[in-house]
Length: 76
Image 1 (tube, rainbow, N blue to C red):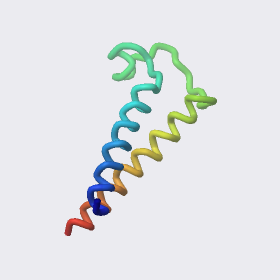
Image 2 (image 1 turned 60 degrees about the vertical axis):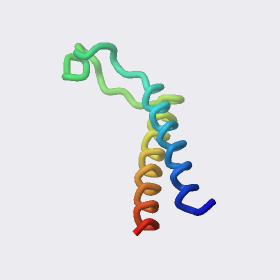
Image 3 (image 1 turned 120 degrees about the vertical axis):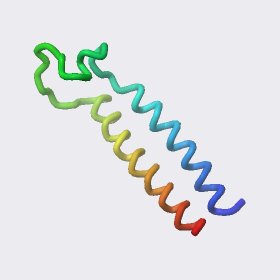
Image 4 (image 1 turned 30 degrees about the vertical axis):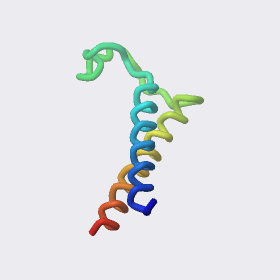
């Protein structure tokens, strides 16, 4: 198996993990909070699992982009 196929498989796995991590993050319920209708929410710092999921989302997103660029460079 060549490097491009291996990177493609890794990219699929990272993409699935990214979707799972994003879905596990807890946000306000309903569409109203998406458009600014939070109703009295105050800023608070992330702690525990919430902080881990936030960091994991950023790391997985960067990995996904880096793998996609690597595949594009290898195919060129």
